[in-house]
Amino acid sequence: METQGKVITCRAAVAWGPGEALVMEDVKVDPPQRLEVRIRILFTSICHTDLSAWKGENEAQQAYPRILGHEAAGIVESVGEGVEEMKAGDHVLPIFNGECGECRVCKREGANMCERFRIDPMNKVMVSDGKTRFFTNKDNTPIFHFLNTSTFSEYTVIHSACVVKVDPLFPLEKMSLLSCGVSTGVGAAWNVADIQPGSTVAVFGLGAVGLAVAEGARARGASKIIGIDVNPDKFPLGREVGISEFINPKESDKAVHERVRELTEGGVEYSFECAGSIEALREAFLSTHSGVGVTVLLGVHTSPKFLPIHPMELFQGRSITASTFGGFKPKTQLPFLINQCLQGVINLDFFITHQLPFHDINKAMQLLQQGKALRCLLSL
Image 1 (tube, rainbow, N blue to C red):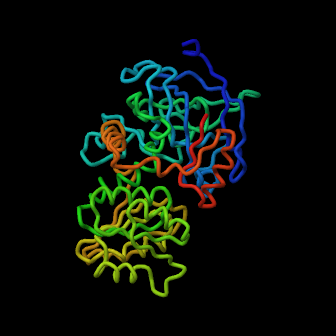
Image 2: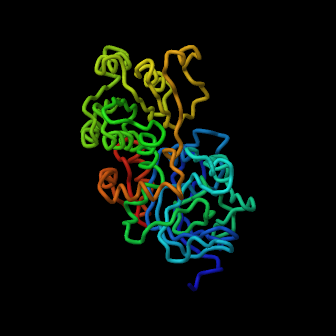
Image 3: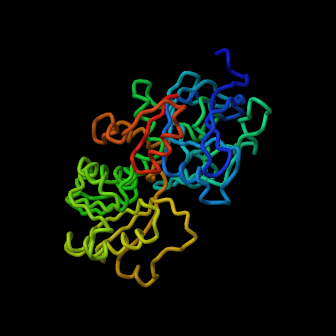
């Protein structure tokens, strides 16, 4: 291709400060270096991790100017030296939590936090050389990266360990959801909790990730799924993914865990905290049945507070763990989930509630912030 090995000028939505509207800018994107891939982003969407970074909720993570975004799909424009598993024209998913395939973690079954390319909100440059690949077109100001991906740009450069090749027959607009939200929720149900048929489940927070947990639980044959959220407008969506009971904490005259225990004869086998709330995490933990209860933490917690659990409570047979990217190893395990989606086991169409052109990205941010969208798909 004519652009291979050359700087590309394209449009990107640049964050210049916490909470400020993203600005559509002409930016320069350098060619990929060794083991890197330059991708033409076709579809991207926004999740709460992007929203949290955009609002600057964690001062230590702030770095500007910056290109956010990590949930996307696109086509390889060019590859750097040493990249053999993909080539120009391949359809790919950028993944914020990579897989080098060589470190101790990648070689261990059941682990997916690659030592080199795991999610790192603090990182703002390429891992390989500590430099950026983005610059403003007007004055060559360096623009920082985000979560190994930076997909709010028509072109981006990503290390090949954070790129998953997919079959060109797969619809990329749907596949983009698997680069974060849906994989995170479904994987938490399948890989981390390993929900068994006939079990009971409580999901705290019915955003896209929480509803993906419910969809995963439904697919695994859960006998009862309880949804907890302060926004009753989300309850009809919950019914579509198998949630049969709903609790609004604002309208309950009892603590949520007491209501869950009443509905499940002592508590659920599995609870999932997807709200990013310490209070919700406490209730999720207490909602599980003693002796068998498992709580999985998925919410993004920006509060400095620690876990609201006394060590002795763990001796009651309840356990708690957390999940990143649903426990999936992206390169080796994500293809299985993609096939499950194509077979109709997981309904990706359900999660796309809005579609907008890329230049309306600030409107998409508002829809998510207001709780009016699960995923707003942006076409570049």
